[in-house]
Length: 120
Ligand code: 5GP
Ligand code: ZN
Image 1 (cartoon, helix red, strand yellow):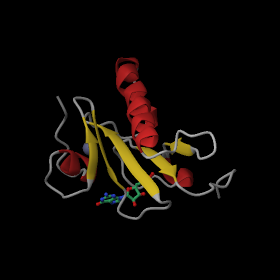
Image 2 (tube, rainbow, N blue to C red):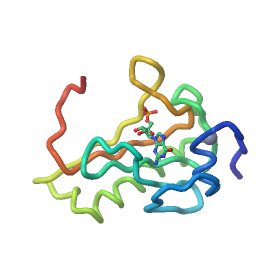
Image 3 (tube, protein in one colour):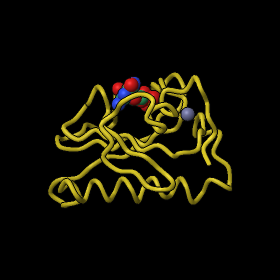
Image 4 (cartoon, rainbow, N blue to C red):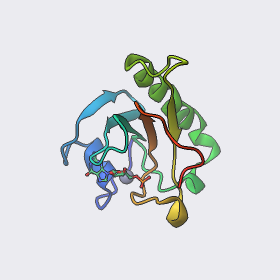
């Protein structure tokens, strides 16, 4: 069962207290459209469990974190991005230099345009 971090934006989205365009939900995660999309597909996958950063992931979270990837791959597949001629990126930012702004881990799914590498 999720912790209720009352000051956490993504806990509020998880609980439906702040509206979001939810595209996928199951017993472990919720996925919703990013409010400021950086690509035609930009979906965020969050665990129900409030984990602030990748640094806070523990061994007991292994299934949960792996689950975020399978959920992201499922949505990518549904939107045609699993095609080798298309493609997608999944990424989790941690702390200042990586640009983390919300401290409830979220896997970004980005797709629908060529994505530069390395990122800026
Ligand atoms: P970060 O920079 O922490 O890796 O990513 C946070 C993401 O959350 C950003 O891409 C930002 O656009 C998105 N975001 C911030 N506030 C909201 C919100 O209220 N609703 C939604 N759907 N996305 C948000
Ligand atoms: Zn949270």
